[in-house]
Image (cartoon, rainbow, N blue to C red):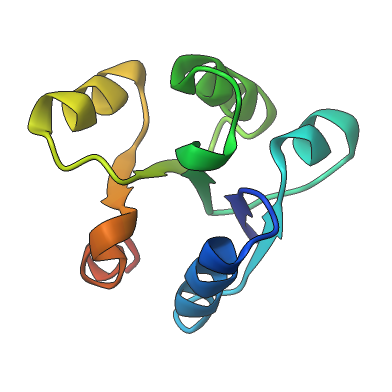
Length: 109
């Protein structure tokens, strides 16, 4: 199952709806991953607007738990150097929440 890490809000509900059109996915919060036995196979989308930790720490937690998954950072960054920083941290891909539909089709097969 693919995951979207983020809070229960209207933005994430819309993102889930758009991703689910292409592939099954469920929403969890970062604490759920730390506290529960959640499984994932495939893609993990991380809404970085919804986490209180630095993006590098979030990535470390996720990679430790799901080392074989494709981890996609999501944010509203439009500036290349900010996006590049996320990619240098080790995220596999980046999707702007502002251009979500267009970016999503380039990530999922």
